[in-house]
Length: 414
Ligand SMILES: [Zn+2]
Ligand SMILES: [Zn+2]
Image 1 (cartoon, rainbow, N blue to C red):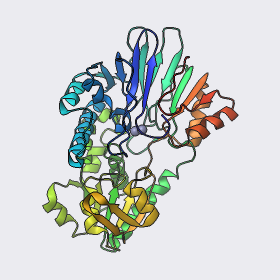
Image 2 (tube, rainbow, N blue to C red):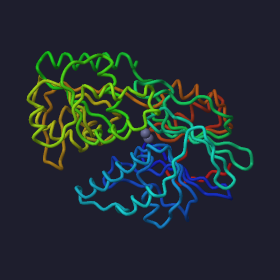
Image 3 (spheres, rainbow, N blue to C red):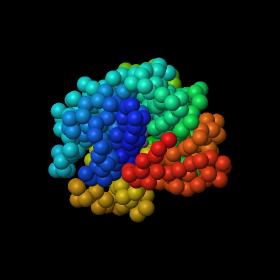
Image 4 (spheres, protein in one colour):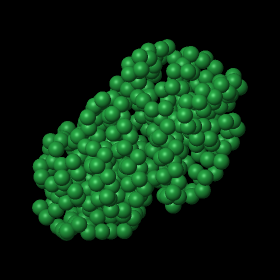
């Protein structure tokens, strides 16, 4: 489970077996799945829809294991969108996924919506979902076992407010074992207000040069956040959203109670036009404005035709707002100044003003330590990060019993 992608935590209480998240590593083609589980599971507990947590779930249906999949309701609809998109990408890339559309449908049928702070029982284990503050419908999963011990698996979480989301629910019961994500365990985030100011400054300067600001972000939870930032700062120009974010925003906006302010997206969308089709794409790149689209790491999606058109325009800008994984075109661009996309034979110098601005929805270093101190568990497992070992070491130096489970094959008896 070290590094980010194919997250899965298999729990066997002796009475019941369940898996918390079952994700894929999507930066790799074909995507990497968790190691196969021995036998069937009685339940899947899903923290949130992002593919690194949900992408492997249809594989269970393909293997004729059809357990209930517990998650916050919006996650079901976002999973449908992301799973169907994975199948579409696989078709385009001519790779085969180990599951089909039918398995996606079966998995969606097996979905059991749960509510935050409302416990439910497996056989002997009582489970409660708490709001994780990461994206709409993201949860931390609290399991109270028959022997009285309690485990909290954080999934991805955020302990500061963003424009879109209220921070994670910190009013938690006692925890004996903590499994925490560690995405930013080695650093702090830059100040959020400064990031917002910088984003708006780039947009304004680009507009003054009659250019276009192209903003790349994840479809679920990031582009919506950026729309709220643009709205808050009163950016006045044509604003367009293209790619999968359109559908994701529509789904999320049906669950307004999960947002920090329930009308925030409605208000931000007043100034926004959705882009459909190449005719519209060609039209909108002729005039100054802002275009927000996927994919966040430039590894496909609607951003490709825009980059093809705009890469040589010095007056335009490209802002990367997501984590850039090793080996992705986004990371490569930041390092070399070139946009390389072999699938469409693109290898070009990017003359646009390029900037990465961090609008993370993950907890960062100091807050991770504060969270551990607050819960003060017997044992901490550090997962979902590129520096889990170092994080576990630092926690040990701070008096905790902490460990970074090594890729996939470790069993812990608690
Ligand atoms: Zn996530
Ligand atoms: Zn994640």
